[in-house]
Image (cartoon, rainbow, N blue to C red):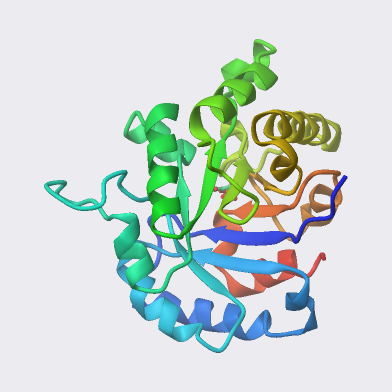
Length: 250
Ligand code: PEP
């Protein structure tokens, strides 16, 4: 296997006001160390904080990203934000296809792929989220779901530089539940094979994050699994100390 540079990413979801910028500041200071030479870090605050957040992290390796983008460049889409707008405020990543968006807004693989393509066109790195529901897991369909979502959501133009995959079992998000280390190993090995089948050699170094109830207490064993190239962290990314403890397992 190829050694890829890990990414520890935080997804704040619909949490955070100007007050929370103190946490971003603390994270930016905390990752300004020698570890940042080998581990990338990212916080995705709500859109309202993007512009001020990117200014705050100017002197830090910490990157700022958005949580979603529209698939079109501009136009009559009230309430939406384009990938170009995200790039315009100096953010460098965007999450697409998070399970909460797939559920709340019925986002399909086809749409998620269009959003990833829009992100690439704006020179953003797309973090494409996939993962099975509890029902799908119980029915033994986990790998089938991952195969279908990868085939449907990852554009053929994806490269290791412009795309990150986040494997987030839906039942593990915000629940405190995580798959066993062996289940994570099997899922990530499978996704690696699929990415290589779709993208050739490039697929070997596309980062595959694990997400779903990653905490300081379980991060070490999860991040040590083969083909786990970092974490997408929800709840535990809201507190600088927790996020930095997860980063610190590397
Ligand atoms: C997420 O929202 O991507 C996530 C993984 O949430 P949590 O860490 O809270 O389970």
